[in-house]
Amino acid sequence: MQPARRDDQPGLKSGLALFASIHLDALRLAPRAYLEAWWWRVNGKRLRARARFAPLLGASPRAYRLWLCGESRAGAQSAQSPQSAQAPAVQTVPIILLVDPGEGGAALAATLASAA
Image 1 (cartoon, rainbow, N blue to C red):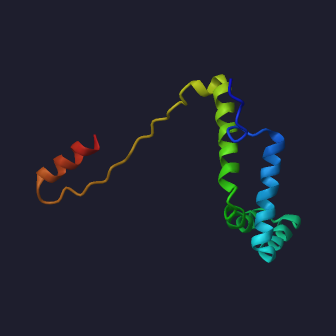
Image 2: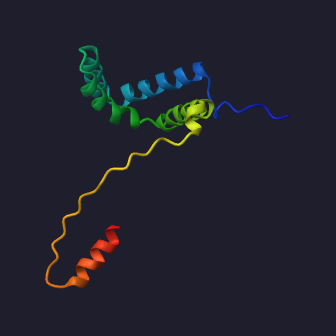
Image 3: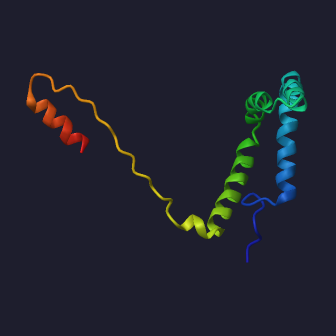
């Protein structure tokens, strides 16, 4: 029996530790930019802060592992929900096609055939 690997699905504690280490990497690599992003977040400018944090946090070598952690959680949640097994309802929308018939009828016929 092999021991479970910690890298496959980190628990809550290791996920938070990973999150904190990514933020510390960003603070270490670009302290001024990180503090500016943090300032925008504290002042309630969430979108501006997110736009400033994104490149800083993405520069960390651990960022991909955190992304994988979130993807595995999302996949596990969608596998557990019974509604995800059903295909979403598809709405049909009519398409209005405007065609210039030009001088020849062959081009018009080819256009209408491809649109059908």
